[in-house]
View 1: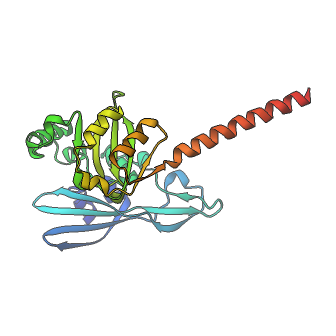
View 2 (view 1 turned 180 degrees about the vertical axis):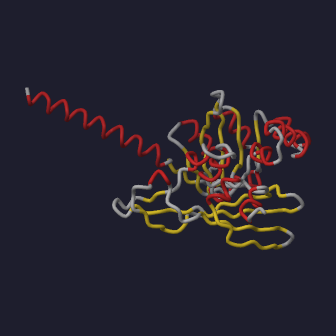
View 3 (view 1 turned 45 degrees about the vertical axis):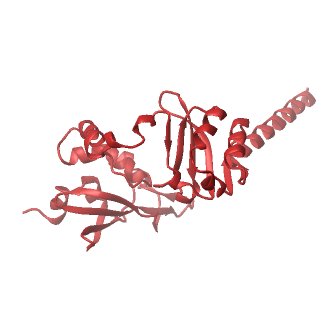
Length: 278
């Protein structure tokens, strides 16, 4: 006779059942919500340390989990501990856990990040199908990608004007083959769904400005603040496309300049000290 945990392993990731307790489940608007909390068992890699549980990090949710016949959402709380001696905050290393389980490292990566998307590879493993083939099928058929209205120009330009907000960020991003894209995002969405306003191939100011002018002037005039780096091209883009927006330099670049200047001063004084010793 199978116990409850063994039965759940038939439907849910083994990694989840072994390290989390199911706290409750409820059905709302025909969606089944299942809530899990990580067990208060200290990570093996810190077995010699004196740990004290300090609650949980923010909950992550698996949307549209593929459980037959039901729309299911998994709500997962990961535990954190404090090292009593050092005061350091500790979390379980899911990459180490995944090495000894059936569920590969993909689900471990999901637990390590604050993402809400479940990779096609994991879904494929659950149902015994090739994950890559399932991903292709999803793209070509299930997702309606072929009928996407922006498909014809998506390699050069993708626009979501409806995502524009009063606070934006603009930066350049290098993708897998080294090609550069200019990415415009909304701060209002905080990196989640709805944050992408535009992604444009290349970083030339003329090209980017021409593309962003496709967004209505009324929408662009609503932007009050735009965060950017110290490149002249980015400043020109911001000035031309969002003339009413205050330009804010990304603190990373300011910190980098300050650190480099401090390093130069340190080296100068070091050489002076060496000369004095001679």
